[in-house]
Amino acid sequence: MTGDAGLVLVIDDELAVRRFLRAALGGDGFRVLEAGTGDEGLTLAASHGPDVVLLDLGLPDGDGIACLGRLREWSRVPVIVISARGREDDKVAALDAGADDYLTKPFGVQELFARIRVALRHARGAAAPGDATLSLAGLDIDLVRHEVRVDGHEVRLTPIEFKILALLARNAGRVLTHRQILAEVWGPGHAGENHNVRVHVALLRKKIEADATKPRRLMTETGVGYRLRDRPEP
Image: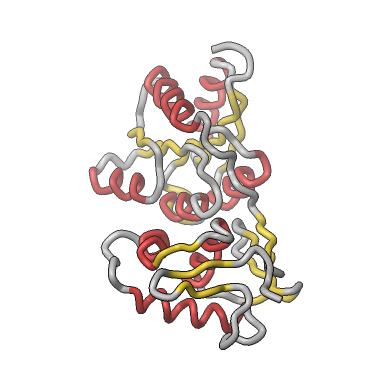
């Protein structure tokens, strides 16, 4: 490749690996951003909108799977995991968490380029990554920092409450079924556990509604699921 082949974000705590990837990718026309921790990588992903992310699983501030999960809350950027972990269950866990591909260290440069080209082809025509901050219905939701403000006042949400709110906000105006919410928030294997959704939505409403018994933001679609309004009901 020649010219500007795209922007690649490398999230890996090993300086030698980052140097190797910087030289290899730069020589093939890619621009490269580097991060040594998951938090730094998420910040760069939010501010620069890379075309592809190369993610190591062994990060100093947490497992790469957790980093990937946080990234997938607001971005569909292609992610290729590059890891020394070669066990099948590690690969399955990464792919289930939203990775597009998995390469086991050490790997060849040409194989890496081939995987990147495939990831870019799959992403072609897809919607651009969403904003890292959503503002709607009097809510300001920072999807990177996991911070929520209601009418300018910060509220504290549990991880599950935040996942539900973020999911609904990314689909504002659309009805999401119990099944969809369970799959996205709790993961596979929780179908039919609608009571989990109802309990956590009730708790969430107490924090984002002026009157949880008369919601104006997070609406129930009886027998179907929930919908977050673009703006509060008058």
